[in-house]
Structures are given as structure tokens and as C-alpha cells.
Length: 138
Ligand code: IDP
Image (cartoon, rainbow, N blue to C red; front, side):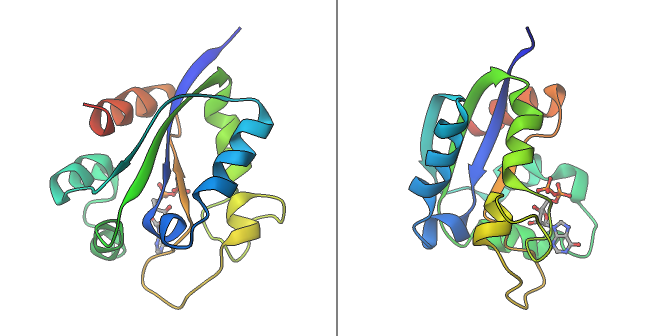
């Protein structure tokens, strides 16, 4: 058994496009358990912590501005190998080439902006998940 928790965000583009329900339906259909969920108006301070690994990259400021543009839905999921399982459901970072059948591949595209609006975030390791759950559910 490798029971894990992960932090998932439905990013502002997903909330704005009213895809939250469709995204959560895929998570629940896969069999993961939602253990906590809330809509959040993220602050710059919260986002600076969440995206600290990307500080200084060309897309960092557009990414923060995008994440400040509207509410996100923050979700804690639990299940065996849920960290890699959710990232598999989400698809690769670039929505243009994310595989059909994934959240990003089915619902995402390139909108010609400096930041990739790709609908969801999922933690990438046990350490990241613990850190990110602490940030969003402080
Ligand atoms: P991930 O969300 O697939 O784990 P990360 O590399 O952690 O990808 O990047 C965080 C977010 O930053 C991405 O989800 C995407 O919104 C944005 N991003 C990443 N790389 C680029 C890029 O090269 N150009 C524009 N935006 C990017």
C-alpha cells in the first residue's frame, strides 16, 4: 500500500470556463477520494510560496498574474499512488500536445499567451504534496 495525498488545483481558467465539475467527475470516476476542497482567491504571497521553484523564469510573472486573475479550487485527494495517478489524468504541461483523454488534452489549448493556461495543477512528489497542502490549507 502506498496511500498518498496530493494537492490538486483547478486553476482560474478551469473555474472561469465552468469545468470544475467535469474535472472533479474524472477524479471521482478514477476512484480517488476528495478529503478537502475549497474555492480560494489566492494572494501573491501564497503564489510566491507555491511556485517558489519557478521564481526568475520567463513565465513566472505571467503565471502569477494568471493565478491572481480569478479564484482557484483547491482539492486534497487521497489514494494509492494518487500523486502520479492524478498527473497521469491531467496530462503533460503543454495542453496543445497533452494526450487526448487527459484533462489538459481534452479541455486545453494554446491561447497565444505568455503563460500556458492548462486548467489544473497536481503535486509532483510526496514532499511537494505535503508542502503544497500546508500552503493552501494552512
Ligand atoms: P506542471 O504544472 O505540469 O507540473 P510546471 O513545470 O510545474 O508544470 O510549471 C508550472 C506551471 O507554469 C505550468 O502548469 C504552466 O501553467 C506554467 N508553465 C510551465 N512552463 C511554461 C512555459 O514554458 N511557458 C509558459 N508557461 C509555462
